[in-house]
Image (cartoon, rainbow, N blue to C red; front, side, top):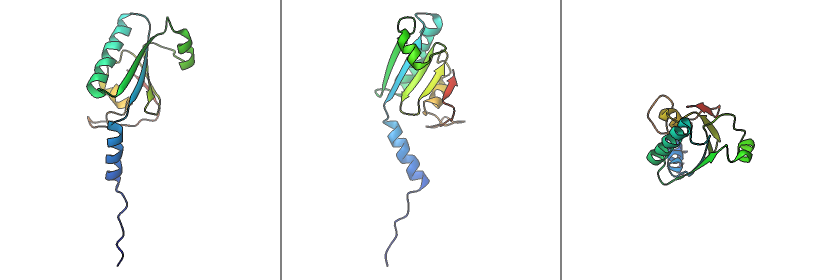
Length: 129
């Protein structure tokens, strides 16, 4: 009698996605306005988050919008500080001083909604933090 292989379970698919996510490289760009207190706080906060949760697998570029006007127009920045997660997709934007760590982790898909788990997915792609 021929034996059928069971199709992959939802759990197996979730575990595979989690493993791939754990090695994903993050490309982030933080837009700030000079050395204001809010900009400085955003830089410290996002660097802390990156080092704690993405150590060794992120690229963080800090862009001063008073110096790099062309980048601001291309990215349609309307407020600063603004963090843009370019990779992994989907692209996400965060506005504020990056002090709400749980919201940042949720938006970066590093936490599950309503828990301190691993991943979360939202649909709007914008987060105020």
